[in-house]
Image (cartoon, rainbow, N blue to C red; front, side, top):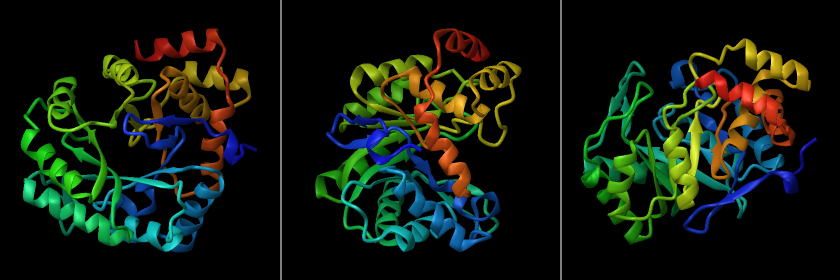
Length: 288
């Protein structure tokens, strides 16, 4: 069993240290990431187990629920351990049926930060990511006004560090001209490799690349090669996919989500899975 001391870490450019195996809290909400969980006690248990396993990186957003997940995090973990870092996102809201509505007006972004603070029970947020793209892809629109609004909150002391979610290489450069960027959170996994160059750039610049949907998201990874490698190594396909991401780049951090304690433990155990060179070569070909 992996212990706290064995979880690998990455120190961001701003000095914040996160466990590379994090926990994405999105799945703790109800179906469609909307409304309360089916089993509130189980959701609380998963969050507490994540901390017990040594995870110091929890990813969330006030639009999960909305507010439901942040309130669960507060219920389960507040007062927070000193080494626990909560990374949240702004840039969207939900309608009364659970639809996702982009919300990038600078004034509303500031309001969303205050909502995250209130629902998490915090005076300062460790990291706030500006969510500009969607699950379908990124745009090349300017994000200067939006990121500038968050930079103002950073200067006021309400946010320690800033990141980006669903962005292009050019948008990262644009944001860096306004304020330091410590994280980039984009869709990336074995089968979705469009951001290979951005992954490498983040490693060069000491930026944590948080691969969301590391296991495929709404369409789980399906590959005979992945299954064959997993069988050979005596691991699950999910563990192999996570281990590949950890070995892909030293600055890659993972935020797989689950509402199951058993599945959480399985994900965390992937940090102990060393992939041999021939396995990596085979897996690399999946997204080629």
